[in-house]
Amino acid sequence: MSRKRNKFLIALIILLVAAIIGTLAYIVVKNLNENNERKSLDNIAGSYASGIENGTTSATEVTSPSINVKKVENPIDFKSLQQQNSDIYSWIYIPNTNVNYPVLQSHLDDNLYLDHDIYKNYSFSGSIYSQMCNKRDYSDRVTVLYGHNMANGSMFATLHRFYDADFFNQNRYIYVYTPDRKLTYEIVSAFEYDNRHIMNSFDFSDDNVFSDYLNMIKNPHSVSVNKRNTELTTDDKILVLSTCLDSGDGRYLVQGVLKKDEPTK
Image 1 (tube, one colour):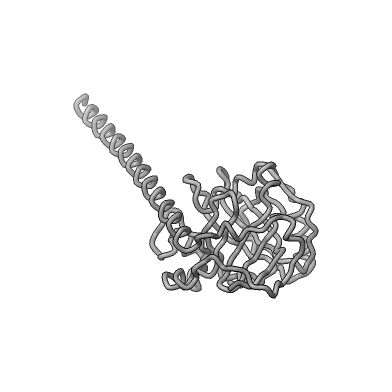
Image 2: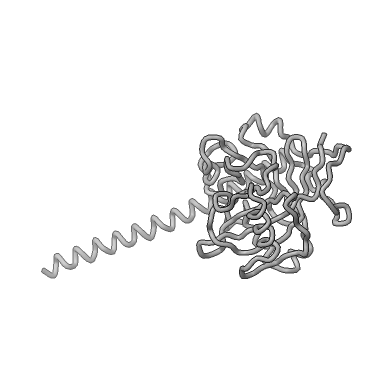
């Protein structure tokens, strides 16, 4: 009986050691892959979006929505990007964060880029993406972009910097480029929210529903809220950036309003 018990204990120890080694190996491989993906993402920005920092706008230049007839430079090489993947339709850049990425949308699978890179390869980091409920031209009243909260600081992880009031106050703008436009959004608020699907939960074609939503993002009933006293109307276009919380099932949202729409050359 004692021998059987000893054999059982030895087998159990071997299984536990194997499980620990397997878990550690998975963590090491995952971290290596994430770091390699981070380097690859940095290379993508360097190759296809060089000089994007030069296109930022000071606060005094952005005062109200406008269609500017004068074309501005487009720093994104969309031709080369779309040769890699036609699902790439825009680029997002937020100064003083790591957000400097192509934006994708699959016409076949809404969540393809949750775990695939811009080349459609499996990826822990995934990509920044929207779903088919949103038009690619950002003409919807509300457009939602998704990105992971990666431990290595990539994707939408550095949106969490907007938890800090000083950072929020000093960084006002989100820049989105399409092949022929530059869109400048002023950040209205940043806050924790539940994990509901925003586009499926609100009928934004209804003026009253949209108005209530605008009031909500101006005065969120949430913890860790940072906001600006920005006037919003039902004529506005809202951009929502959505990522995971550091813990829990909710989402961290950064919401901006379109302030300038410029054609590019």
